[in-house]
Amino acid sequence: MIIIGLSHGLHVAKKIAKLLKRPYSKLEASRFPDSETYMRFHCDVRGQQVVLVQSFYGDVNNCLMEVFFAAWTAKDLGARKVILAAPFFPYFRQDARFNPGECVSLQVIAKFVDDCVDAFFVIDPHLHREKNLGHIFKVKAHKITANPLMMEYIKKHVKNPLIVGPDWESYKWAQATAKMIGCESVILEKTRYNSRDVRVKLSKNIDISKNNLVLVDDMISTGHTLLETIKLLKGMGAKKFTCVTVHGIFAEGALEKLEKTGAKVAACNTIPGRCAKIDVSGLLADALRHTS
Ligand code: R5P
Image 1: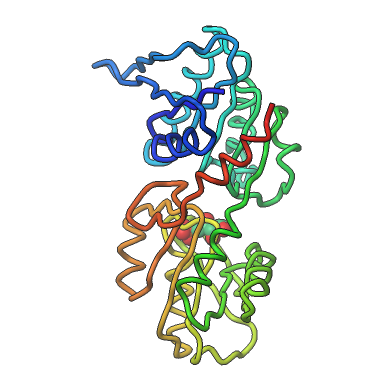
Image 2: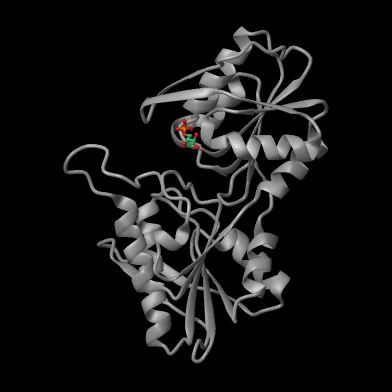
């Protein structure tokens, strides 16, 4: 097995290779002046299982193009099997046609993955209407969860926590995490009007004044979900907040906006950044160790 770091997966690829005691190679990828992609392998992949490590943030579509070129080139060079290991994978939220004529992006992306690689590993994909990766991808797709790592982080860094899930999707996780930590949890009701307009409300009265509130979500994108949550809870007298997420996308200055409220923010390093304090490379290494 050879571990290959693509441009947005380098930060975890080297660690994965080290943990697995497998060779690591960086893929040379650049853009021609006309913006076309240039790519070159610097290792012999013949007969090998090749693990392409790529995360998807920033120019997400270019990240996909890199995988496309790398996977086909690896096969063309004689790789036995090509595996995509994705700390963060995009487009899971576009899993339905919400308005007539829209592209169901997840379907297109799933076809792309099926055509490019033989197996797929992903950390906490945003599964909404469809919970089973086997119904989305034809290739073997493995879902890995960072929940135990996040729970450890909360246990270590927050005294007397109360876990807050901003919507019903976070219900199971928030409740399970609270149980493991031995604290209470509360779930809000969220209504999303568009990608930047969300409202949250709490349907029962609870005393939150004595706890340090830990807001958990699988991803922070524009941050509006958690900003609205903080606004609501501040109105109820809450003072201290920690936001913990798997995927810190932090689009449109979301991190700065959250920090401005006084909240502390921690994310997994599925996407690198100054808040990426929880390392997921061990999770990917463990999952890959058992693949043949
Ligand atoms: C939605 O269902 C997700 O779990 C997150 O709550 C959402 O994607 C966060 O997005 P934003 O930060 O833009 O509100």
